[in-house]
Length: 195
Image (cartoon, rainbow, N blue to C red; front, side):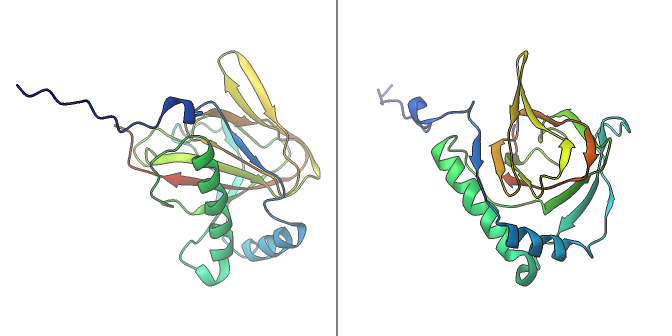
């Protein structure tokens, strides 16, 4: 038997911060948000669903921004990927490949919510490594973005144009909207599926 030194392909633990999330303030300006809302307006919408198919679990409408229409939406995808790449390098150092899912535009009307969930699990979404949620307006009440760590709930304060980026296995929710309409963009960055 030949003695060989062990090799490690893991990033130095001191450089990895799995418990962190990353906030980008003013990821999109007011003018860019107005442009984006004009672009998504004609897209078809549908009621959001979940893998569990529980009607009381999620209440919102969604539209999908086609990633292959780069002349219309390429600027959105480039901006999102730019910031997710920075957040990943500074925090988690996940082995990411790119975008498998289209960007989701979501509207939560009064009473709209998305209860505690993770953005992974299930056969169709086990490739998700990093999630992003960006507020596109602030003229609503309720609709807070929250993380759950053990027994603790942490509210993430996001203004119009702000985004939070986090590992897709973080437990999170959108609390019920009590007034107005909450508008947001959601994106997931993919890597090899968890095994």
